[in-house]
Image (tube, rainbow, N blue to C red; front, side, top):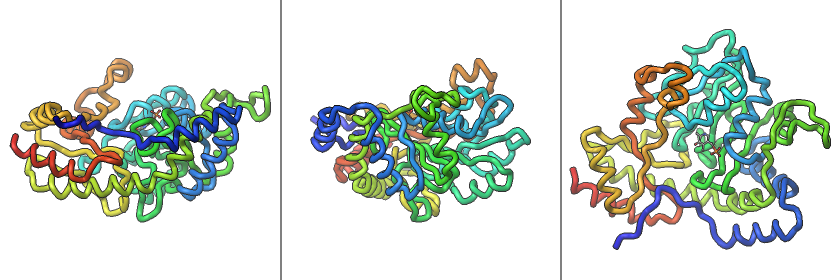
Length: 365
Ligand SMILES: *Cc1c(COP(=O)(O)O)cnc(C)c1O
């Protein structure tokens, strides 16, 4: 009997249980000292000046748009190949969503594709570090400066990754992160924003807390995006483990790539030179059409979990209905979605598993 191999598995044990217990016993379970401590530790890790912890990654993105006063009349450019939050937050704020295509190798959005869509109304663009591979931040930063628009990075999948040997979190004007259960570290549900901009930081804190600057005094339209001290105490413990999680994921990825390279039906993930340490949120392979279905079935028969990842935004039913997008409007997004599958990668997965399963897969080709 082979035991099932899930697509992702958080590294959670007694340490987190103890921390939660302590938080509950302290008598303070909502946002308090633990959230502050978690934020300080995120700053230490990412080397960012400021950090604001929130209740999930979607709230982090929404709070960012609110802090930048993005609303009706503004345009925001977003890649179609992303998780739904990245584009939903543009609609929440009444701004105009402008979608664009991605690069077929990295799956990430390109400077060229964003630049083509910039108009006088463009207020910001959001890049997404898909699968844990950062975009080429320096180039996007330049683009933002050239047009005097904000560069927001949805780094939900790249917490702990390194760009040109520096940890992700300060390269864009603002970064958002998610600590959902399948992300590199988790607080169950949770998220955070990092920035070096004090003004934006001050606004984010107010927005997170119902738009109030002091008790019952609401100066802007905020929301309840607060993280609890219970979640933060899990996060503080998880932060101690981030380095070893990323290190082991990189070892697993190396083994996968070495073995899978030998198979002509599979293209392992492309790692650009600036991505000096991917966080490997997912290990995503491109598989030739003729064997893709067969491979998924085979892996499922052997209890190895796979994911087809999320379909691009422009083919999501709500968006098709609202904006009348055509399927082939963003061809690279469609082709990426049609070819890649995510295979398991998580701390604790034995190195030998990645070799073993590869050998079994070989039989079907
Ligand atoms: C996970 C994720 C989010 C949303 O985070 P939640 O914590 O689930 O709200 C946003 N963008 C991307 C790219 C993600 O992978």
